[in-house]
Image (tube, rainbow, N blue to C red):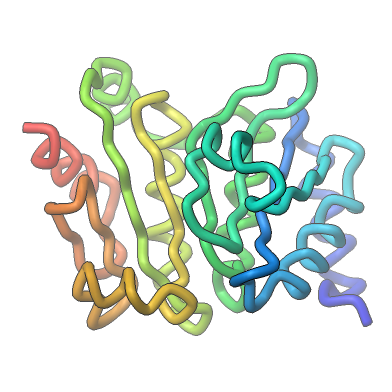
Length: 217
């Protein structure tokens, strides 16, 4: 049974027709620990079938450890969204855990963002990202039932698109309880920047940029 309903398929086909560059989805799985791999595989397969500009590859981290290391995949299930085609580019955009519920919308918007090559950030944020010289790792903890989480995830992904030094992960807190406990996630979204700077809730662009500056100060 399809997970994407017919009317949603038509809407997505129209949205994906606006992509100006190919998008590659890479799905990393594991036979040892991948609770929702079957569901994620179906989601990504159905999405990739909606446009010739989309492609999907799947790898088992145990069978392709070098590739997993190349993409900095240290847990599964995980999804990489990157530019495909003849000029591939990894923007550091990641999903760890199933992008279901409200997070399906952030998955779609991140695909559209990469496929259009436009982050949608303000000129000021773009200019700041262009001058960045210190690596930044953003982790956004979410749950599928959180209506405010996609906003936080997509904003983090927007900054990742603008700088090769920024990585941005969506982390489904219930699938990775050890990480949620490590970073003291009591509510979502909770954004963790470079292990030590935190944001509670879905912050606007200016607030996130200020926190990113704080993390590298």
